[in-house]
Image: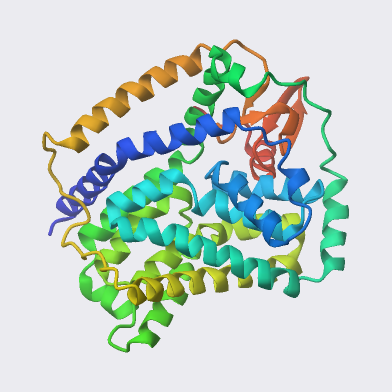
Length: 409
């Protein structure tokens, strides 16, 4: 295979992965944007003051309806922790906001099969239960108190937001739907690099990496011990891949095609919260000692969640999805996917026009680094340069802005 043929083949695979999932991405991010616009976050912090089952259930629900970006969810979890939420509840919120969201489940279904979409939610519940049991017992309370005190000096509670209109009234208002459009556009903008990287890397893996490589990487033929090795290896690949959020699903599809066990693929999908950049962010937030234990616990529960999900599905005799010779079909046909993609493209265009029609100023600002829509009253970070105020979705973006300035868009 020539270099140019291989390069084209990888991009071709990536394009058709995107084609197969485009309508699902628009639908998922649309639902997420509507929920973020119409469901108040002001009550989240009041509901997460401990790590009892009721609080962890609330943290999981709030996470499911929040942003699916790993950077933003880590920043919001830090903010919840600083302002009184229990650390374990904050971590559960972070896990749910990246692994139990609608768009992830839909894309998993399309690229990997309904069994993986089911595993997302079953394994997510297992992870959250394990976090509730393990995390409070491995991180001393005085470490957390020190970290909270240090962070609070730079993260004071913002002033009270003006009273919002009742939900029914906002649902009928143009401004409310403009806010929802802003969340959709900004969420897609925010993780565009992860999405593109995920599809391109997965395309090249599916097109160019021979099956023998994956067979040698993932232990096979040893029953339970092969499943254990695969489930432990999945998060390690996630750490090294730098791909987070929905962007790691196409890569997971390539791993499944290449020979990884079911539990190994599930644990890889769950592990988008322990990529190297995020581990460095946790270290900045909480210190090295907490970060090391947090990373170890997350890796353990992600691997355990993937492995347990695999054997639960086997126990109830659910069929494993096939390993196709190709991750997706590499032709465009006049079928339901084409129709749904056309509808999604029109809906996305209309949403973008609604987003562009918003008046200047107002409640929201745009993160100048990643493009995320940020509520000014609850922005995790803010700075002023030459008399102009900027708001950010996370400290990560603020530090990058301080170093590099706003990137060209």
